[in-house]
Length: 115
Image (cartoon, rainbow, N blue to C red):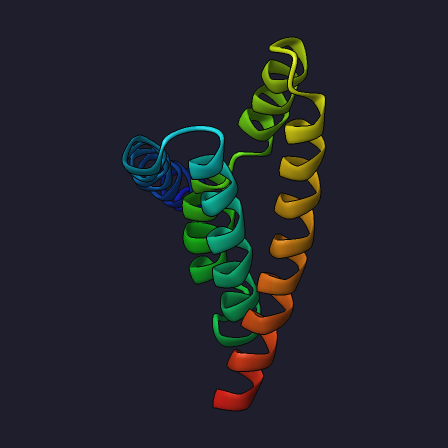
């Protein structure tokens, strides 16, 4: 347990910085969607390839937990609705969820093909 929390914290810090940079480069809300799709793909790959011990804690719980942003996704959706763009909000939600599910499926398939 003494190494668990520092591993998660370090991964979370790195993931948060990467998210900030990516969303800043692309812009919200689509930068947030891109983060969630990429994070879903990567977590699919890591689920297959990384041992359950420390690697999953650092990479999956920490790094990807800090990187992916469903709380920001929810807020961006609300902002679109409140900004008078309910159709864009619906497209954003649908695209984010469907593409993230496809990405995690592809990540698992790719990683299983590598093993």
